[in-house]
Length: 271
Picture 1 (tube, rainbow, N blue to C red):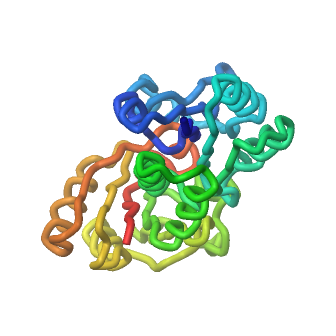
Picture 2 (picture 1 turned 30 degrees about the vertical axis):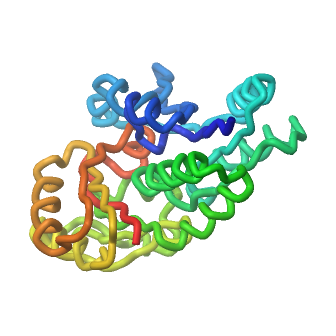
């Protein structure tokens, strides 16, 4: 049997993880007073209040967790397929590779998704489908690496501060801000966050996000945390503009929230 393992930035619900047969290993976010393990998306408590107080940091899923889960699955006689958040956004992929190298097993395959959140969720769904079709772990890994070219994310934030502090801005100009009601449009391309334009105000923000999403997208996941009203507007306008796509909401978790802020709005899609 193939065991699929991922990290908590996939933002899965417990039900989704059970249906996909996916084991989710936690990343960590913490304040000077307390350390929190990120769990299933509906089981993170009032994390918005924690993030709103500021002074939060994150730590990627560590190699010890991967080693323990990989070892457990191998002892059960399973093969392991691990799909992680982009290596250009987090050290999680490196942790998984380190754990795999320590076990030195031919039954472990690690895939760098070059994405996260809804993009990672889409790849996990594909991995389960491939496994159910009888493909082996390395054939699935190759399929997922090909799929990466069709998975993208576009998003916007109401405060560039969290992204600046995270150091994950790629080539985005550090001077970009949200003064004068300017809102940056950003994309995750080849695993890195880069600038895609600028919007002035909430209406323009939605328009520019929609422009970034191709009309041949077959599935779209709307991302938000506290910005639910903008998520609803984005959903309604996407339904009008891309009528053939399957569109759904996916709330982001606290670890991504630390880096993006509570006002993030965006979408992941698969072409």
